[in-house]
Each structure stands twice: as C-alpha cells, then as structure tokens.
Amino acid sequence: MPAAIEVNGLVKEFKKGPRAVDGIDLRVEEGEIYGFLGPNGAGKSTTVHVLTTLIPPTSGEALVAGYDVAKQGAEVREQIGAALQEAALDPFLTGREHMRLQTALQGLPRAERTSRGDELIGRVGLSDAADRKVGGYSGGMKRRLDLALALVHRPRILFLDEPTTGLDPQSRTALWEEVEGLASGDGVTVFLTTQYLEEADALASRVGIIDDGRIVAEGTPATLKAEIGEPSVEAVPADPGDRERLAGVLARFGDDGDCPRSTPDAVAVRLARGDGGLADVVRALDSEGVAVQHLQVHAPSLDDVFLAKTGRSLEGQGAGAQEDGVPDERQAA
Amino acid sequence: MNPDSAGAQAERRSPEHRPLHQVALQIGALARRSVNRTLRQPAQLVPSLVFPLILMAINSAGLGKATEIPGFPTDSYLTFALAIPFIQAGIFSVSNAGSDLARDIETGFLDRLALTPMTGLSLVSGQLAGVLVLGVIQGVIYLVVGLVAGADFEAGLAGVPVLLALALATSFAFGCIGIFAALRLGNGEAVQGLFPVLFVFLFLSSMALPRDLIEQDWFQTVATYNPVSYLIEGIRSLFIDGFDGQALALGFGFSVAIGLAFLAAASATLRTRLTRT
Image 1 (cartoon, rainbow over the protein chains, first blue to last red):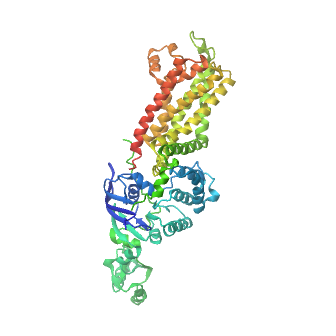
Image 2: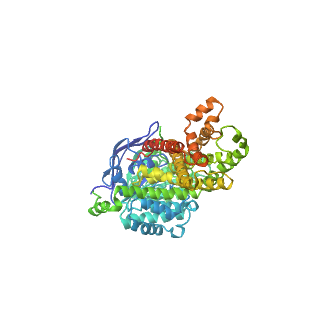
Image 3: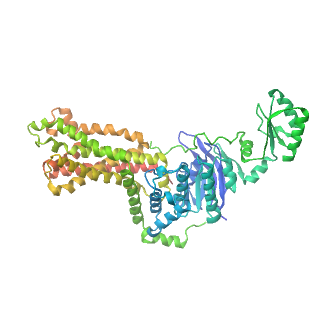
C-alpha cells in the first residue's frame, strides 16, 4: 500500500545558511501518528515546511498523498492540513471570522461554510468563545482554533508543528486527545513534530528522531527503548570523596561503559538484571557503608535513545530554549 | 494512491468551483478581513482621520495671507488646502496596508493563507480593501469638515462622487506602495520607516502653493516632476475650479499609474515571498 508520506534523500540547504535537512528518508503509513522528535534547530520545522510545500527542497524526493511536493504543490495542499509553529492567527478577528475566512479560501460550497465552521468550532470546544476576538484567547484556545482551521477541508494528512509548545498540562492533554481522535476516529494521518519526549511517547505510533538535520533513530517508541536495553541506576554519593567506592559497588551490578548518564558527581550503570537488581544494589551500598545522597532508577526512555544516538540529552531543552524556526529565505533580495 | 475521486472532480466542475468564482470568493473573504481589521484598530484609524485635519487647520490658519499673492487661484486658503488631507490620508494608507501585510508575514499568517488555494491576485486585492474603504471614509469626513469650516466646493453635488473616486484612486496608489514595501521588506518597522520619506514627497509638491507661484526655480522643477503635485491638483481642482478635465485626468492618471506600477512590482515580489511549490 502506498505511503501517506514518503521521503527519500531530502535535503534543504538555505542560502548563506545551514544545511537544515541533510538527506533524510522516512515513510509514514496511512492513518499513522508519526512523531518527529528532536531538539531546537534539529530541522523539524524545515522538514514540515518542505512537506507542506511552503518551501522547495534543495534535492531529494518527497511524496505526500502520492504527489511530489516539488512539482505538484497545489495537489499536495488539497490533501493536507497544517497547524504550524506559533498559531498564526489574527488578533483582531473572532474565532468564527477565522473560520469564515478559511472555509471561503478553501473553496467550500456556500451552504457548507457555516455548518462546517460551527461543527469544527464545537469539536475543539470553542463554541462559547467563537465570537470573541482571538487576541483575548489563551495559548491553548489559539492552538485548538489553529487545529480546527487546519481541518476545514477534511485533509487526509495533518501536519502539526510543535502543537503543544508553551501550553499548560491540561491544554496539552486536551489537544493530545483531539489528535488521537483524528487518527483513530477519522483515519487522518498525523505528522507531528515535538521536542517533548512524553508527547511522542504518548501519541506517536512511530517516532523518528532528528538531530542536526539527520534522522538518527526511527521505530515504535517501544522498539527504540528496547534497543537501549535494561534500566540504569544513577547514584550520587553523600560524600564526594566516596565516588570511587560507589563506582566500585555499582560496577558489580552492571556496565558503566554502556550508560552515558555518569557525570563528575554521579555514577550510573546499566543494570544487568533489570529492575530486580535494585534491592541488591541498596543492600550492597549499605553493607559497604557507602552513603548516598540520591539514588534513582531510569527506565529506558526516548531520551535514553536520543542520548545513546547523539551523546546529548533532549530533556529540559524545550522550556526556555529558542524556538526551532525556519530561516527566511523568502526575503526578497 | 489517487485521491481524486469522480465525486471530487465533479464537485470542482460545479459553478462554485470555477476558477473565476473561486478568485472572487477569495478576494471577498480577504477584503472582509482587511476591512474588519482596519476598522478594529483605533491606533490606525484615528490618526489617519485626525492628524490630516489638524495639519489642515494649522496650514490654513498660518498661510491665509498667501491668498493675497497675485495669481493665487482662490481667496480662501482653506479651500486651497483641503486637498492636502486627502494625500496625507494616502500616506497613512502606505503605513496601514504595509504594516498589516508585514505583520501577516512576521506572524506566519501568510503561510496559513499560502496553504490554501488562494491566488496572489486575491491576496493583494483583498489586502487593499481595508485601505480603500478607509480612503472613502476619510474623503467623506474631510469634505464635510471642510464645508462646515467654510471651504468652497465648486464642483457641487455632481463632484462628490468624482472626489470620492479620486480619494479612492489615491488610496489605491499609496496602498499599493505599502503592499509592495511590506512584501519587499517583510517587516512592519521598516514599512513604517517609509512614512517620513513620503512626507518629503508631499512637502516638495504644490502642496502649499500653486506651482507657478513657487519662486525658487529648483523647487518649482522638483514640484513639476513630483507626481504628488498632480494628485493634489486633481483633487484641488474640484474645490476651486469645478470640473477641470486636464487636472482630473492627470490626478486619476498618476494615481492609477502609480498604483499599477507598484502592484506589478508587488506581484513580482510576492512570487519571491510566497515560495510555495
């Protein structure tokens, strides 16, 4: 069966800028939620801009809904919806006016415009706020309206570029439920970029991890985590002078060379016998008289996958970091 | 995968899916948005209505003696000066149209529009609508205030629609400059930077005196080559002379020529700005 999205050797290089996407290959099946995970500046948004036809690729091939993004832009756009980074809404228009504009631009028949708009506004829970100017909406409301606008023409493939960045946990969960419903209920294929590990873990049936414009790992979250192996234990000695003794004790339970979590303060090893080895670790530390300030078991996570593939952690990069933007090559020279 | 079902193809052939109908629908939708947005921004609306009137009041109060210069075409400087607010309003149009579009570029709203079947013609035409509506509102207000303050309007009632059409043409000309600047610069602050530059064009025109009464040769030459002079003189002719065919033709001609030139430039720039495939 043909893929909803098929990308082969895609490259995007900006004038006087970086090679933002550096030869990626990926395949997203119909009805799948594909999570595109990576830190700021990894190339996620640039990939979305190319796949949604907003910028042309430098080289390589990308088919969306069977159409070539470089040569059949109009056909691609008929099949896709997109909510790009930072909900781009007009603060002076109401939610309903946005919907009217979008339904008209998408060419919906007159009889359908109002009913479709009302249906979508209701679906994302904005009926009460529909006649208020968007300038007064919360971040979550803007994101939900953005999502509703992307669905106006019943797209088969939906691109969501960091849809929950900056949202509170409640708004984030509500949006996740909506996205899950779109895929499971309506059969929409969702291509979702995120820098939140838990978002990719919770939503995506498959995940592609991108770093420096290259896909460094791809698979289901479970498969990727299984590749990492057993959980790791991380301990910080109460007395920094005990670090070597602590390392000696932990070395009996696993291989520290396989676990990149060790720092100058903490010692970490991958447990050879899984979670079951933890009790033995505690008993051993007690019998050797090594006091610890902090002891934590890490089940393999997508961050471990990222760490294993790139040598860097993804966790904590999202909150205060600069947004992952697309360099503006459209500036008229 | 072939997403084009027979039903979808048949639907696209229906009257509502004909290309011209679609473009008209797009222009209408974008125009409605542009008008709503303009009327909902008092910070744009009020200065463009009030400041030209204040400047007109100052000019007509301070330069009244100019009417005593032999050859001055009217004995009311207010009547002479009433054309100036129309041009100043046009200059505000550059700022308004340009800033709105630049903000769309900066916020990514243009990308949202680019993901729809919207054409470039629809975008530019729709974006101008707010400025044109504002131009008519400004024209009516300036005329009413001028008449109440004692200005003459030689063209009479029949001249009102001509005056408003000229105001519309002036707004079109300056609005197109704003659209071009926004697409070229992509930045609201840069577009605002054009404001003083355009005021220089206004001051170097026949704004304060008829061209033949400007004593400095260089100034007279500059004013003669400055198209803004002809925009002012077209409007002014309706107040002072009634229907002066040549002045009106030059006023309309220069407005439309400026508008079309910048519209063509804007369309070319739009192709660079909208890089969608």
